[in-house]
Length: 148
Image 1: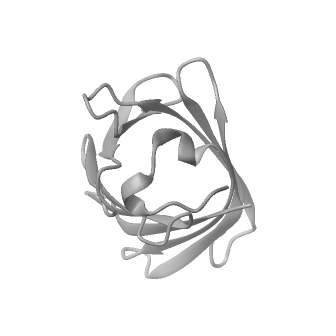
Image 2 (image 1 turned 90 degrees about the horizontal axis):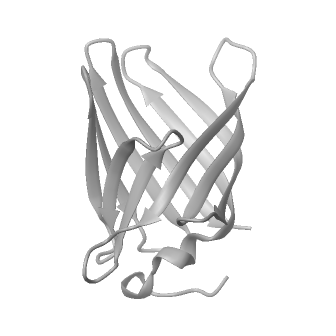
């Protein structure tokens, strides 16, 4: 994969294999979980499919397999620099811009609020940081991606 500056990241830059290291800081439980795995962003008919597989380590519990699938679609803005992220069933999750090195987005899933910031300043390595708040959850999830 070619290294590009944050100003030159385009939608297709994400296609390929990525290593994933995630830290989940659960403020309510007072513990930190870890996930180690891999992500593949592969072309489909409308954009990219994000497929994540990993091993989740929660203190005091057995290691669990973890998978996630999202659909990434190029935005329809005039500049074409937005990424629309959908759940696997096609419901909208959030949209972020590739115009700057640290875009932000949010998603409300009643009663929980999800706030994400992306960090592309060390591209092709990148990070997403989620802050999640709700009546039964308060956690920060930091995911670091690196090309494989």
